[in-house]
Length: 316
Ligand code: GDD
Figure 1 (tube, rainbow, N blue to C red):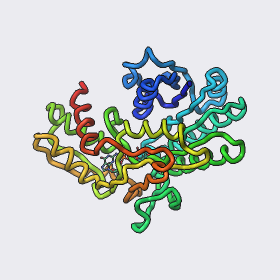
Figure 2 (figure 1 turned 90 degrees about the vertical axis):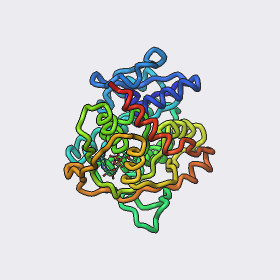
Figure 3 (figure 1 turned 180 degrees about the horizontal axis):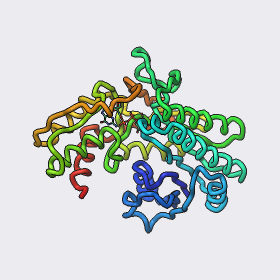
Figure 4 (figure 1 turned 45 degrees about the vertical axis):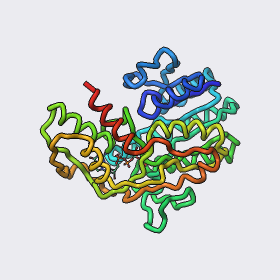
């Protein structure tokens, strides 16, 4: 069994590669010449890396033709919401064209590849209070260019399933975090700031954006297990929420992190961190996925945040 992971050098991709290797799956991952390799250093000898620019149809076609993967986990994307306001065209192009090239190559080569698409809870966007916990049937009201790109990826998966019978399973993952989370994202950003303050690398002031938003966080190690199960037991053409079913304000998440440190820290709002529009609440209902696959989250939020802070403490 051979799995292809796009975005293998990233946060989720590196955890997924480790998980698949533990299940004795052959792993191939796409890289670009500017990819950072640190997350996959320890497994570099056990995986195959293939240079591929997903936006380039020729590059993708030759990759798919030569690798003929049984499983495709499509994780590569521009995934940071604020960046999508600064460069909306790049986000839209990157996220949509990359996937289109993959789908077209798999279709043209007549492969039976099982495909997981990393969609997002951001697609739900504006959610009315009575709509939580959010089910897959909720209207999609995206609030950022990133969210729009994910809606397109999601529906493109549906369309390729309907039009050509490709085995596409769409996972709408709510926020996820854990060791190696990129430092732009809120959990990692706050944890890194605390670790830097503890090390004396920065003054004891922690900068924040909107602390009122509510998010549903799942540990990345639970998420990658979910992706595997999505292709083992998920029904092609379906979409599934992957969530913890619990919601925290960003302020509560910050309090938890601060309680794990003995440093005296002042919290200050940085207006630059506020967004043109922010999704107020994301709280997911993952029952549909549980019923299809038996998956449920196993790692408690406190453990995830403890491991994340420890990760940043150990970074040079
Ligand atoms: N990044 C960041 N930095 N966010 C902050 C900060 C800060 O200093 N202060 C408050 N926030 C708030 C944001 O306004 C947002 O409401 C929340 O914290 C989470 O922000 P992010 O961690 O940047 O994630 P996101 O919710 O915008 O998107 C993430 O989750 C999606 C799934 O729901 C990303 O991982 C997406 O790629 C993913 O699809």
